[in-house]
Length: 509
Picture 1 (cartoon, one colour):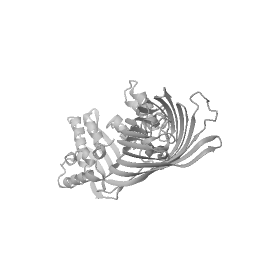
Picture 2: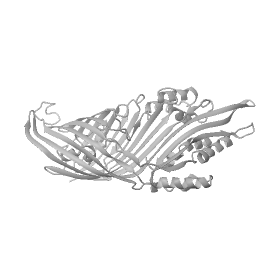
Picture 3: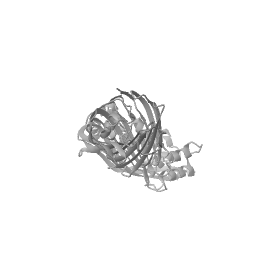
Picture 4: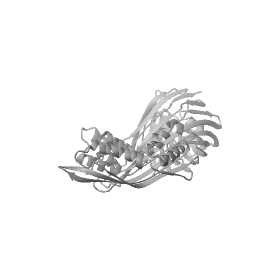
């Protein structure tokens, strides 16, 4: 088993070498918005509004917020989701005492991939977002803000054959015919400095059933700094041949046709080029000797500009008899729209493409006296050193990363201590955890005793099955510490999603 682990993870070595230090996110989440289902277009205020809807820099979402907000590590969010994250399947097969072999293993792969076709694929994406610093100031007619954000994304895709290799290992019964074993992986890390501005564009004392109608518009240009970009696309087939030795079937050979390309840049690309040059002179050199500390791969390798913008229509509808008097007489309706994450990064510092292709044939266990452990150890060493490590490096066009742009609509209704919301979002692309299909978010917040927010929500559509979320904390208006989390209820058909966010330390004055 130890030898097989070397083989299995040896297949991934190029991706790991290029991306181990990274672990952004389509719609930006605060602890409040993720607890309320992941929306926020019409109610997220303060410096977080820069990334969701800059027009909301002008709103006072609870009517009790001081004018200024200061966040120190003012928001941390993590989200992962996709068709490969199937908690229903994992729970069924890994928490019930089953032994994952034979027909049980086959059933698990069928449930996870939706069939027995070896080319079926599943994927997942991970997004991490940190707001190290944020500040906003709301005036009577205009508001400004400054916020920084660091984002990291990972995207991973495998086919059923690759998963079968992980489940069965090098089992000749499973790979007795030519089987595709494919995966792809990509990672990007970047940071941004966002300057937000919002102002009151229109004010009307009365409009039909509404009073004190105000229209706010906002824009938040941002300076982008790209720290890392790397991706790998690996395609192969695997065939294991056996022959009779004495009374047993013994693996005679493994035939592995493969083709991969790895795109990278910066210090990592330079290290891989140095390894290639050394390998061409002496194929006994090891890749690890040419890779520096992972933290040194993070620099500033790309710069660019992005934009978030939006508009919010706010009105007092206290005269409309909606659950009159129960939660509070004051009723504020907001209707908003926003476009977020417009922009892209071009990584043009030593952009490099590493490619390799060919056929690997390995024979061993020639007679009954051969040690099968030695066979697999030799195989692992050959794969890592002679096959996957023998690549060609060449210059390529800059690596371009498009920000996960979204078009968002939202509405919120605040009635005293109760806020309800609805959001509808569309992704412009499928970058990171973005999805082009629509996502509907519903949220509710009740401020118990006015200072303990209790939040609940759901998201339908987007990149996974239906999500349910909740959050809580303490919000004293001048100080906030809160968290939110979400998880898929049933994910067997469309995959799962898990997300969490923490407010950090937020001071208001």
